Length: 89
Image (cartoon, rainbow, N blue to C red; front, side):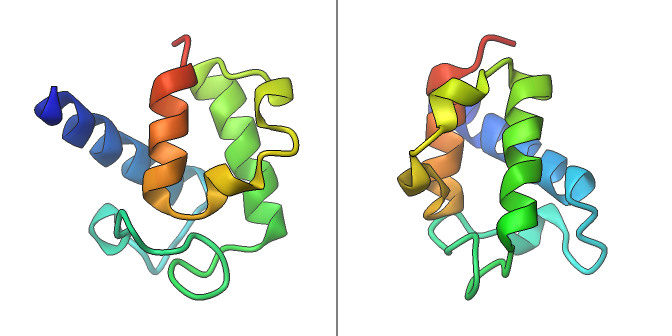
């Protein structure tokens, strides 16, 4: 199970770098317990919208599952755990 979690997190990190076009980042730069926004990875509100679209298209999570759930965007780990639990693809 732990290996599956690690593999999924690695895949998600690679997808985020690609989807958000983080030219100066690699999957290895994304730390599980680091904030996604401001400090940490330094994402902004437009990136949050892109992450929601990624969740819909790549993982089959409807927008209604994400609305008003800012806490899932706290760190990479909270985002990854949410997607892993809700994904349909």
